[in-house]
Image 1 (cartoon, one colour):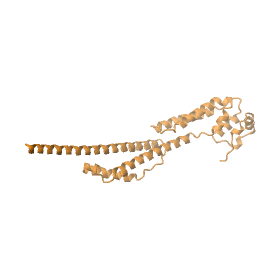
Image 2: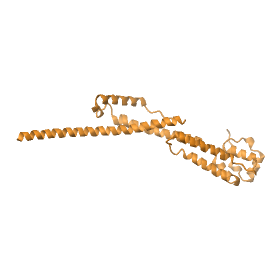
Image 3: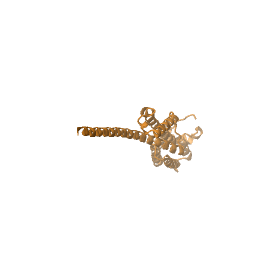
Image 4: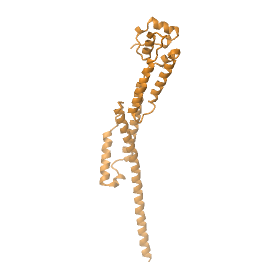
Length: 237
């Protein structure tokens, strides 16, 4: 009777130990699965981001460090697990420090490069000219409405660079529309009592395209009469 109980207890202990080991292995598998899922999501998202930026014509200066090497590691790990699933808990290399951490770093660096590329692209599109000219024009009643419109458009364009859009292609289309509106607003800088030479000079100066020859006596007289001469600077090309 005592021996039977002892045998039953031994069986229960053995079963418990097996279940405990199975639970520990399952937890290790779950941990690995979580690690791989996170890094896979980050790398996939970066790949998609770089693809849509390239399609939209926004170059990104980014080259993953030893990308081919990590692809080889992924292949080696996949083949090892396929041959023996237990290899997931005894991998051929340090999964955290030599693999997942490195891939996380690549994804982070790629996201940073993509954001910098987008911001740089928007800044180039938003290079409309000197704001001090607009400040000067705002003092002229005939230009106030146009200046306010131009400033609003410039602000809207710059805002696009704050965050990387989900769809760069759609964002660029909106940028194109705003820039067209900006050009139209500049065209509105005209009034019947302002000489056309003055209007043309101011437009050109605001876009850094004014020639010294366009600074005629008529333009000078008009600017001097309104204390606006100091708003302009001569610059070599």
